Length: 147
Image 1 (cartoon, rainbow, N blue to C red):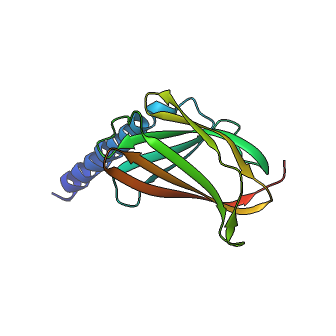
Image 2 (cartoon, rainbow, N blue to C red):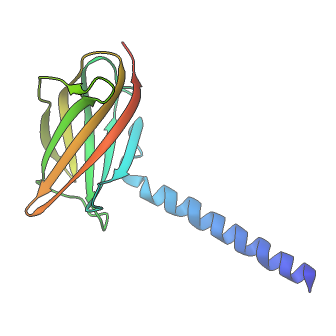
């Protein structure tokens, strides 16, 4: 009986491991070709947001990257109003320039000219609005270096 129980537990562990790996890979399909990703649910859970950095790292100066916005059912969100503000929590301020956000398609929004004007801890605060649904998410970067 002990060997049978051990065999069954081993099989269950193997199947569970394969399911987890398979699910993780399926969830990454939309961004497999990007260099660096940061993913989070919004504060109210209305959206899933992935910040996609093409240059691998963010640096002091102007930065560009994409934001993938999915609804809570993981469907692409089209035509949303997306706003982003860089903020230095340790200094208590952001920057004076506004980043340009444009819709590329398939739930992807391009952020251009987002300025990080000094090295240090930065937060990118993102607001998303579609119709009456509105939510926020903050991505934290503990150390943005000088390029």
